[in-house]
Image (cartoon, rainbow, N blue to C red; front, side):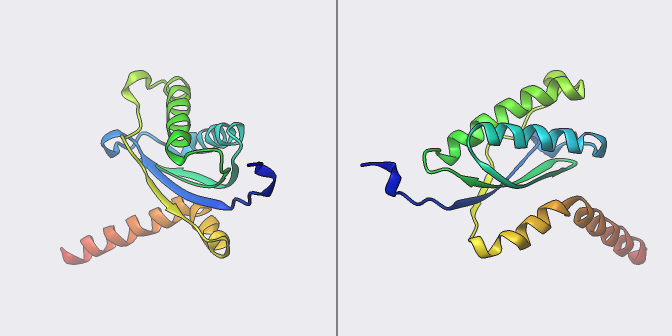
Length: 140
């Protein structure tokens, strides 16, 4: 069967984190890591809708070509980004991604909302952390 008659629109939201959820992704490394992950995904033939990281996790929203298995794609993304980040950050073998990841299929109509969430993820987390601190202070 020829692939010329195959339509594929597989948008996937991946979330993966640092091993033991250690905060090893500082803000000053954010752009470089996002760019590296985007580059890896593009080399694999994916369209990158959004990528962002915050302290201990990465959100990645992709359009994945039908020829790629999501598990294989994540193996490549995590292995290559981990290898690169160990050197870039100077952490060496102290850095690795957790085993596994979360994966969610995303309808085309939801892409704008999810792209906004991912692009603003650090600010969203900072606001949540601030509210938690405030609640804890108010309980004292």
